[in-house]
Length: 346
Image (cartoon, rainbow, N blue to C red):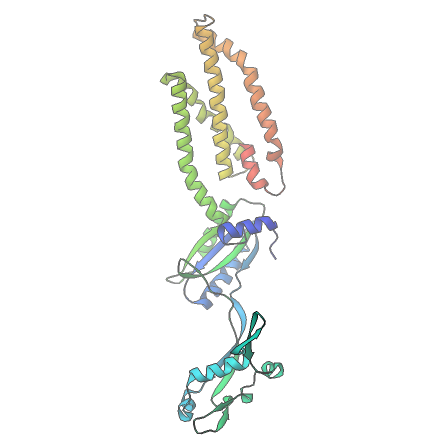
């Protein structure tokens, strides 16, 4: 059983093709070897802390009836495999013999053996007519073998694969995948031509991380340009922009104290934090300029001290209100908290 929220399960399946948080996909050609490798990998993954509901994709177990023909006897009786396959298919699965019309509706007429004969699966009940007019039981030239065949054959990018589903328990996705990857690389020997790929939420995480690597520098560059065009002087833009790396210190320290790794949610929190730092800088610089050019202050030290004291209370109140608003998210432990907590912590 997999214990997760129904909507989350459907969302995971639609976005990544896997119903679980993480999907470990093993690629190869031999279905039996893939299944054995998946079972070995699942056994190793179950030992990793935070990995729950570890389940190998069901690929085998479909009951099959295999009819094996004696080709030498077929040659003696002058029979061909295609004709015999048609007889077996018609007897057990049914063969369309015509169409019955009832007013405007039509129904296929299917012929097959009675239910009692189909349940026995005895080829001696089927007779094959020879070219000389004689009939022989099908069991004379064929044998039936019961076995388990593949229930499904999954492919991705034209490569056969089997997946292992994993749900995350009280841990972040990135660190769990990192530990699973290290465990499998160390303890699972893959034959030549076989490979492992990690999907599910981790796949989305990697894609979002790549986008974030581009989005953060672009956002910082746009902030700097807006500051420059607002004040018209490079030194003011640099002074305000210097608050951005300093503001990151508090966010990094908060994540470290709570034992949280850097994640996409934390990255979004840092972008919001940079915006607040820039906003506070704009308020201070604008107030300093007003004191110098409108109120007649000439001493820079006096401007900084008096202006800082004047604007300190509004800045602190703004930050306090925002912090109190994020406090429930930072302390939450309900569903979705793993996304909310890093954002609120930063």
